[in-house]
Image 1 (cartoon, rainbow, N blue to C red):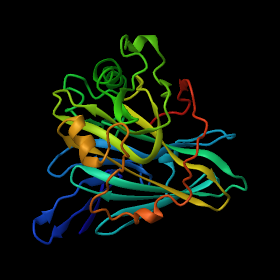
Image 2: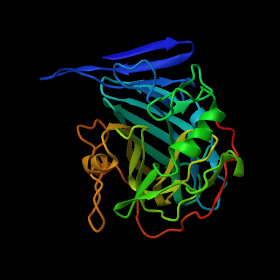
Image 3: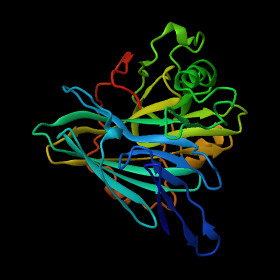
Length: 325
């Protein structure tokens, strides 16, 4: 069953169906706070406030061109079925981006496809995925209190400071080469007053497959993971979010389409248990990200143009130059 409700200008999409043996198959509900855009607040079954927000994507980058940012503010056309939500939008005349989301009980499975509308070959094409545990400012604003305590008000700056100084220095880690590595740029001196609100440092590796941060009590992890090698960004004081940049294509010809697939959610248990569950393998073993009971496209169709040769990795860091929303 698909339920679509309009609440104060926001579109709430709840997908439920009946399992053949287990009764109601509970699924997360998705809300567009920015109407018809690829920006979703995700509320888990039985909860009154969202668990996380995800932008699919926030930005795309490729060699030789200026980054395209704020993609989560571009309206598109969206279609709902009992199993999934699909949409598409045009991005600056350069790309057609299609997004398919399969909501599960505690996570979403997502697939993004990118069609090159330019006359040029696009090299080292990456999608910047922002996933956060709050939406501030928002209509309404909210925060996942498993990760940001109730003592921190619903204020973007205050929650960003907490995220940078308290939540992430040791806890936010990326899965690289079969083990977890810290993502914070300054874990030993995480002082928000010493950096710009949106300063980040790009990770040294371009082979991350996932990132995860533990809840305050260590019983849950908030994560995103992708079936392509990712660059990662360090956390910054401007917001309580994580950034992975999966490689969409090392080289994408004019008119060609490339796809990446990922999962974003909250897991009850340890980071180690979650990694095993989704198929992240120890060092020297192949990692194959699992997508159980997925309504996304078959695996054979998922990486049409993905060629995993060596490619230049963005180094250093920077300051986000667009206005976050």
